[in-house]
Image (cartoon, rainbow, N blue to C red; front, side, top):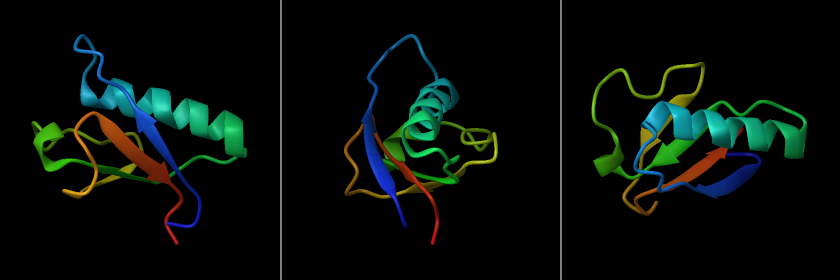
Amino acid sequence: MVTGMLWFDNDPKSDLNSKILRAVDFYQKKYGTRPDLCFVHPTMIKTDRDGRNGIEIRTNTRVLPHHFWIGKNA
C-alpha cells in the first residue's frame, strides 16, 4: 500500500459496503485520489458480495474488527 489510512466504524446498523464507502469518501477528500484497496479482519466478511464498488477487499488478522486499512495499492 502506497498511502494508507486507518478507519474505524462500528455502526451496527450499517453493512460492510456502506462502511467502506464512508471511508472511501473521507480518503478521497483528504488525499485527492480514490483508494482501491481495503484490509479488514476476516470476521467482517459475511458474503462473497462484500467489497464491490471497485475496491479490492483483503482480509488480514492484524487489522482489528471494525477497523479498515484503506489506501492505494502499490
